[in-house]
Length: 162
Image (cartoon, rainbow, N blue to C red; front, side, top):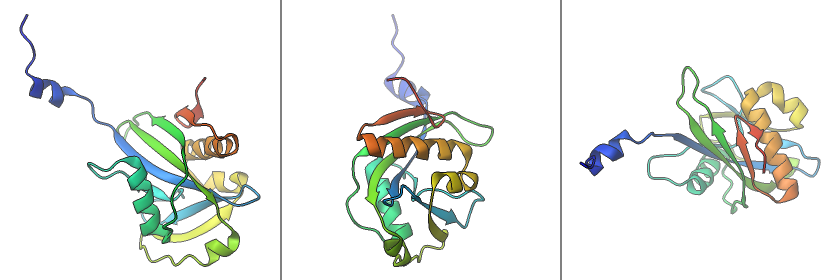
């Protein structure tokens, strides 16, 4: 049997996009969301993983760049498989627990990143219309995970069976 050359095999492997962010919330479970300047839907702090960058470094880098927050991230609380759509390839999204943040903390943020127009603490019900539906589902799963202390695996924003 002839083996496929290893380099050909590697080139044939599927590539996935990855993103990572953090869930920051206050004592009332309002979540911190950001209004980006480059897309219509709001988001949680975070962004796309650069080539060769693991998700935990991506989340820390993006949060530092977007919000100026440098405190360590908590545990990984959500991994979400994102199916391909007509514009984007399939991917994986990671959410880390950013911990508690107060309205005073948010008011003191010095937003200098031109990608961020504003930040806000909102209840999930108020935030959901501003978020893409998949992200609203993912954030709801992240809130549950933050309370339970358990990692939640999602597909298209929806938790999958354990």
